Amino acid sequence: MKQIITTGLYLLFTCLTFAQEQPNIIWLMAEDMSVDLECYGMKGVKTPNLNKMAEEGVKFENCFVTNPICSPSRSAMLTGTHQVKINAHHHRSNRDVPLDEQFKPFTYWLREAGYTTILGHHGVMGQGRKIDANFKHEPIGPWDGKTQFGIFDKYDTFEKEDQPFFAQIQLVASHRGDWWDEVRENSKHPVDPADVELPEFMADDPVIRLDWAKYLDQIEFLDNEVGMIFQELEDKGMADNTVVIFIGDNGRCNIRGKGYLQDPGLHIPLLVYYPKDLKAGQVRKDVVSATDITATVLDFAQVDVPEYMTGKPIFDSNFKREFVYGARDLWDEIEEKSRAITSGEWKYIRNDKPEVPFDAGQAYLEFYRPAVHRMRALKAEGKLNESQKLFFAPNKDKEELYNLKNDPQELHNLAENPKYIDVLEKMRATTLVYDKEMKPVNTIYHPEHAISVDALKWVKEERPEEYRRMVDGEEIGFKKAVQGYKESLK
Image (cartoon, rainbow, N blue to C red):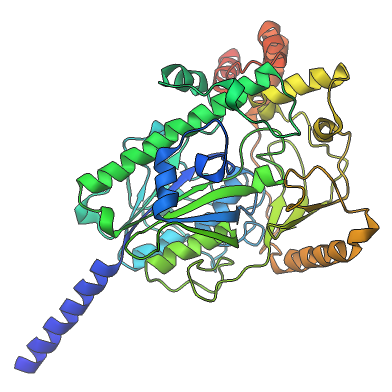
């Protein structure tokens, strides 16, 4: 009997020790953000809290999402598996279709390991509860993938009794929204448009400079939110045993960014803070896929990464990735199919629908791209240079090849340059291999209708003065337009 009791106490102590060793994990996901932080060298913006994360944690310089649009990108991260493989690559599609039974959200495995999984935060703009996955799901509740589709256990708060906990918090401010002007107006030091540095492919125009400054204002706003979350960890005595990860869910919502396979669409920040286990101030140049972040969360939680995942833990001593495979498919009413691989040094893009131009007149983007409207006008006046004209070409090249080391803004397509034929053939062949590896598990295709198409048509016909202001580079408010359209149907 004494031996049984002793053995039982030992097992109990072992289990408690294991539970204490499992860190809490917070995954901060900023919406629509490229590597536009002060710690990545972005001019004009101040991000002291994220700078501190980089200084006291690990900064990754070559992290890329697998799709430059929110819902496919998030679907990949939510499963740790490339969105094409799970047939979640078309934006806002298959929301009524359960995941194939071989796949599960990574929170399922965290729950199995004893974690409380939390969605959102009580103190951030909009409460940070976005999921936006292209498979059947519910925010809160159990998951079996057949009749139960809950992703998280609870909303908004992490407490000591939740430990170990995992919290995913969306930072919405950097997403285009009707709050941009308000954030700028309330800022104690709004970014000066004169201080920003525009990419070469964007025209130097007052409207465009102001729009860029407003974007950086949103980044400074969410940097304050990051500081608030760190302070809460300190106040609750949980800072020492909490991993904090910061990323973007896809690139910035501007020319060549969100929606496109150029670097501003795929290249995101990745900061990992865990002083208890990670040496401070590291800067890593490893090529990292966003699905690797998912696998890393499981690794921190001491959970074996399932074989179906295409991501791998980035702090594993054997971690090595040569390429990230990117894909662009349906986005609202624009049918697209492009594939890309990037090594951080070389980028290859294959456009299977070259007849679809970059500036495709997508309704949603008409509301949210002042730079596009201004540059269309400047193009008509003959005032764009060759780099600025690239986005407005009548079609895309069938293949694109860029040396990112020498041409980081992807202005010089080397695909037809005979000097780089060996690189081109290797990248082309590698992309075909990825195409086969990531072949969709099924061909179900249930896209949602994009209400932005109806709202834009209504604005043009019923609010011509507002449409004129939009063409002049003013954001008239997408939600306001949708609301007006819906009211017109009553």
